[in-house]
Length: 212
Image (tube, rainbow, N blue to C red; front, side, top):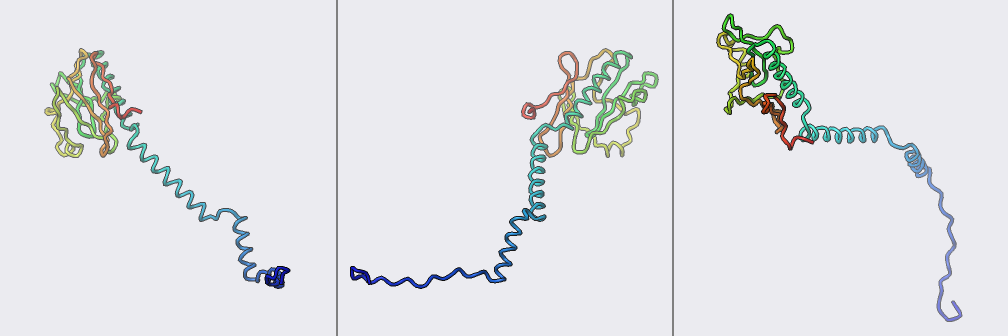
């Protein structure tokens, strides 16, 4: 009792902290070892998988929204070949032409002796070419769309030499049939368009929303 008459309970005896039991001590030691050991192999693999998924998503996003390099490469190749054919026709005073399917194209030359259009065998640059998968060719001549056969249909028909006619004429004086070739990536809005300019040179036109 205090001097003021208030009862103050006496503090009980202090207890010493109890020691960890052997089982608890082993658990604590395991936790310490895990903390000091760092990441486990499974944790590292999970991080790698997550990073891979993020990178794959970024690449897919670029392929669908960014410029299609393969498509542009094919467009530039066809432009170069048509300009080359135009030059060769003028140099050799030779009538040439472009024949297309929806997935391929080839250059033809007019054989005046046989009065036939024939494939060009003496110039490897003008050999027949097939476009990569998922790239399709569309053609407009004189402002009208041309319905192009597929490669499979072309092989089945086996067009007779007398019936083979170019879709686009490349005259020996350098003139061209008015045309527009569009290469398109299936499943996307990616396209490149080939058409002659005012000087008769063929160039690639890319939609503005596809230029970055």
